[in-house]
Image (cartoon, rainbow, N blue to C red; front, side):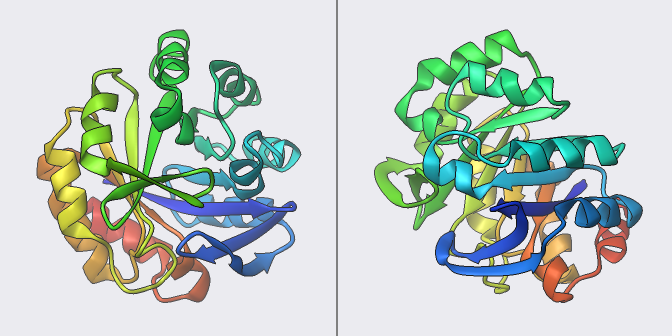
Length: 241
């Protein structure tokens, strides 16, 4: 099971939000590259980077920082935030990003996701972000009437590399992940699923690891690493054990 530390970018800085709310933003450092190097040194297999400004603007806004991260570390980077088209995906893949994550377009422009998947096989991840079971888009600002499970089944047909499922209600809250919701979504698809949101301690890591049997292959950890409620080497050891 992959343990994937998150680096969220806003104005070139490393930040974390609570439940996706830009008004509840905590800045953890001015140099995201230092965090990328730290997570790599502590055993991360992948780094998850989100361009929060890009998610809000609808196009990438922190590409210079992303490129600096990619150049500094040896492990692969997955990047989301503002990637709406196949050209957007290609642009970041050209920078050396291993996987481009498309979220809003998965709901609003399915053809763009399909085009990206076909153009860049095994390089496109679809992000499904849900609040109370329903998909949220445009930087989590807009809530749809489409359930996360319903969208996951539709996306599964496109054969993306992975699906990242984020439960917004738990994201950044240090109150534990939505294990039941993640299990239900993973059971509905064939595509490997990455769990995101709420992982706070080693017990949470072990709970997500139990979902390997239904196709969950990794977990993203954010605020818990920055607040020190969990140590990355310990999480990596628990997940590999």
